[in-house]
Length: 79
Image (cartoon, rainbow, N blue to C red):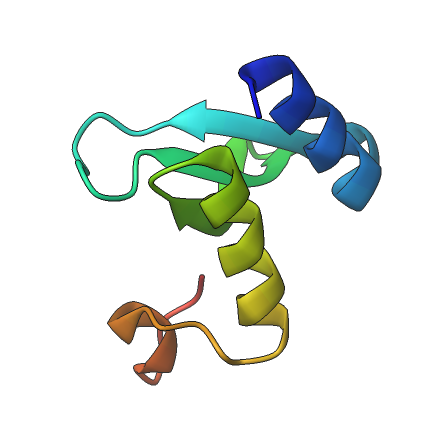
């Protein structure tokens, strides 16, 4: 999946707010998918992975509370 296809999938899942981003600080999980809010301006990460496919699979797993990410299992933290 390329970036254009990832943007199309994000828009399909989350409407006009669907967006993708690349995080340089994480080598293993650079591809971020989620929602871009305008007010206040912030990007809400719904999934991340080493590829766009992995990021969308992580987003699906987070919906089912089945994410393998430790940060999603800690209390008081949001995805």
